[in-house]
Image (cartoon, rainbow, N blue to C red; front, side):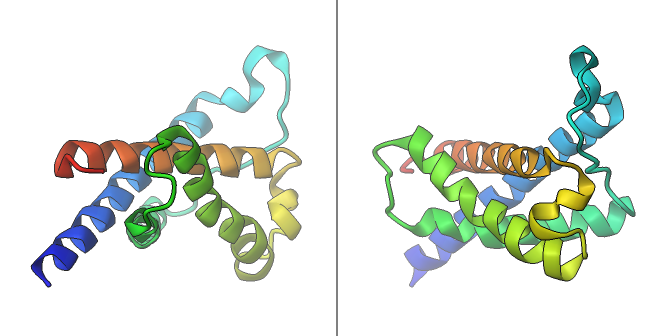
Length: 141
């Protein structure tokens, strides 16, 4: 029982840490206008609404998605594992959140044509930092 609670704690906190780093990436992207880098408009508008509501939701969801790291799936191949686990929250956002919860269309395309690529990229940031957090804190992931 104690080991199960420990694993839940590690994975939830890893998900929260990943969400913090993901949020930093989104804010930096928005603040510095990196969608316009090199003079190319990448057609994406992911600027956050109210920062407190936005960060709270991201941290809680990030922690819950962190439970994906409890699966023994691809532990011997961390780069592949990171990309595969990042697809869970990315697909949920693209196929559930954008079209049904925030009315931004299928894949969030009302936010811009590159939105799906950025959603996947930002979720890879989440999974990468969650994996790093697990390795640092638990030593056995």
